[in-house]
Length: 160
Image (cartoon, rainbow, N blue to C red; front, side, top):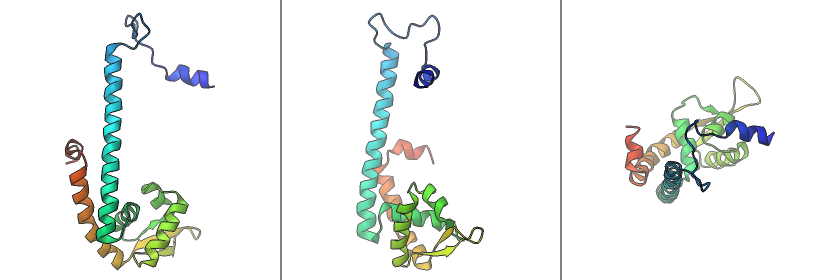
């Protein structure tokens, strides 16, 4: 099976284009492209780590929130009727158990409220409280300022 997958995904050069020199090395264009792709990946990861670390520090110091806390509040802020916990976990890239622990903490601080899902009794709905809305509004300014400062300007410009 692995051999058939490899055969399907291997990209053979078009006829007439050797793709490899006599030495078995990739053609210079492929090496340049590979190096560009690797450099882009490293730049993306470096920007993500720098942004994440700055967000953790500044959201924590100014608002008592971690990045995942803010991401949950931000997702719920655009949903006045709340959101099913499984959908929320998927949206903020957390496991169901990690979201459950985070929701416990946010609920203890009065920022979210849990309720049974009206569509499915097995489901849990999370809703932002008034205190959660206030905390989100305050933290949103910090969040955007940090990202504006730490993300590559060309990346931000693509979404303007």
